[in-house]
Length: 40
Image (cartoon, rainbow, N blue to C red; front, top):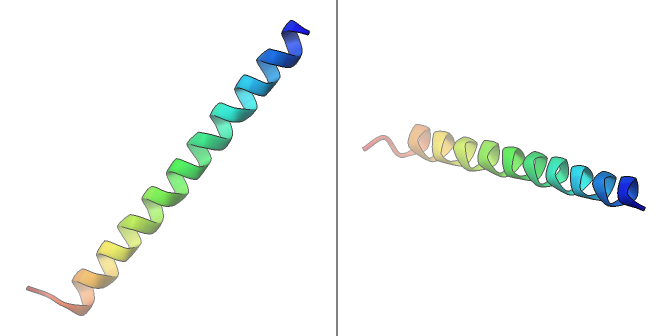
């Protein structure tokens, strides 16, 4: 049971970090394209 809980925690953390990395990447990409389109 303890191993199952540890696996669930690891899976949740890795999934969350992957989602965070993807969202940060898309936000950076959006900023880059908006800056490229509208250079102030």
